[in-house]
Image (cartoon, rainbow, N blue to C red; front, side, top):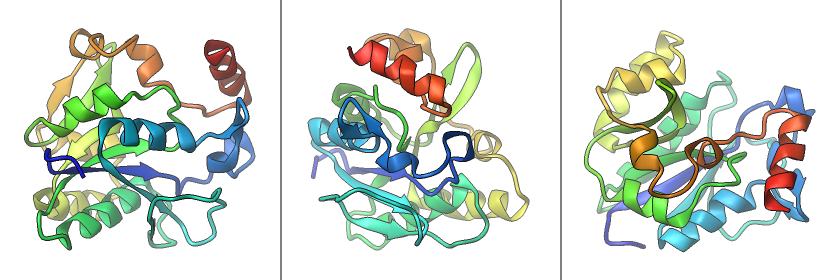
Length: 197
């Protein structure tokens, strides 16, 4: 565990309908897709946890798996489950939120985000990128209220008045659009394979 007092929560509880399901186990260059953000967390020296629904298909993992509620199907369920896990620890670490389909996250970027204070959310071309964010156990009540009102994840995080991390800062760690790239569709998988190749 890093001295920065943060853990990485890799969210894997989505339905992945555009990919036909089982996104976490999807093979990218011979590795499960979820293995890439988990490797970035290890590179950063941060503990990672995987947050998923009970029935989510996952590969064999060394990291703890936190089971989020079955309903509703909303990324905030995973964020709240990770915050509960963090709040139960004596050091109450912050939570870095990442998606299981982000193969180009890097350890240095996660380590830098872990060292920041307060809520943080990435942006790209002025648009919020809530699948790369930093939240703390103290934010749980406000995020629960956002879930209760069915707010989108980006709107929920924006309600925390986060520090917005845009291209100028992200560019220190790589190409921002690649760092924040999500594999949502089959063509995205082909794009990621090309970049890795």
